[in-house]
Image 1 (cartoon, one colour):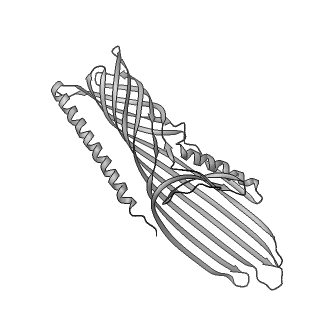
Image 2: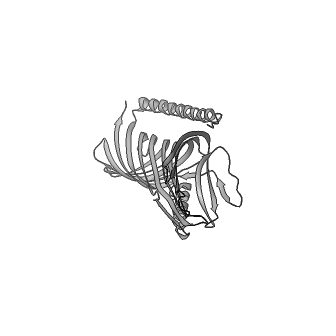
Image 3: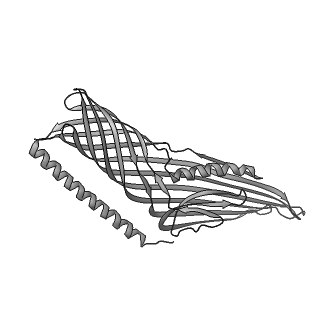
Amino acid sequence: MKINKSQKPRLEGRRILTIAVLVAVLAAFSATLSAQTRAEGNLISIKFGGGYDWVPSGIGDLEQLRSSLSSYYPSLGGLGGYTGTCSWAKTGRVPGYDFEILLHPLPALAISFGISYIAANSSGTYGYTYHEEGTQATQQYIFDQSVTTARSYKLTVIPIKLSLYGILPLGRTFDLYAYAGAGFYFGNLSHSMTEQTSVIQQFNPFAAGTPATQNNSTVNDQIQEDFTKEILGIHGGLGLDVKLGRWLSLGLECYGRSLSMADWEGHRVDTISTRQRLYKSDLGWYSDETSTNTYQTYGSQYYYETLDPKLNKFFAHIELLDFSPEAGDVVRNVRRPSFNLSSYGIRLTLQIYFTID
């Protein structure tokens, strides 16, 4: 079992510090809001919003990984004995939900404090099979191998945001508004991967009386990686509110966000289970051995590409490591991956207004 314990306190300390700063900012904002409303009886509103964001990048380097594997595995079919498949769709839409409290010191101005929830998911399966059979000097042999991998990424981001609104009333029914602001984004990335490998080797001797043999082995590798990241991001939008009465409105807005989350740090648990069975035609299955081992690592997430000499083609990897891979003839493009959530979208909103004397 391999654990770099020095990483964990550093990660926890950074998280505690950032949370403390945000609590201080929230307290100052709340105190200002309370003082203003008590002194002037300002209009307050609560705004709810939800919709889908379109992510042109396909979540940055995650799309690079998906695209690379989608090209690599089917190309194995061009090699003798191989078949390869990959089923992994691009992530193009990301759902998001918002909650804001707005202070309206002037009819044309509002200041908001908000929190949002963003959830991006990407999952796929890929693998290959290989078959070979032939004859050697004393026997016939058959070799079969299959490797199947299923993996899933779940990226959850909770931003705490401050925004400034400019509001233009259009008669008594409509309000046109624009806003911009910044936020502190708390990200959690979960990566699950299961790789199942099966190998069957059969040997049929030509000599009479010599038993045939078979060796079956399986490996089940289950990996769970969890990462955290905090970063500043910016956002803005343009919308139209329809007033349904003095205290209620429905709205539609166009929304944009600039956010790229890199330099992920985290924890990996790798559980490997193996089974090997041996067979002889005169004895039957005479050996069956199993083992399970678990390894843990604290480290950083890396993107890199390795060369498959059979195809003379590079393909991508993203994984947690406790060292930095070195680029060379068979390894290239080593970097810390970026999960790009810069996006644009449409939000439906509901706003409730009230005053505090």
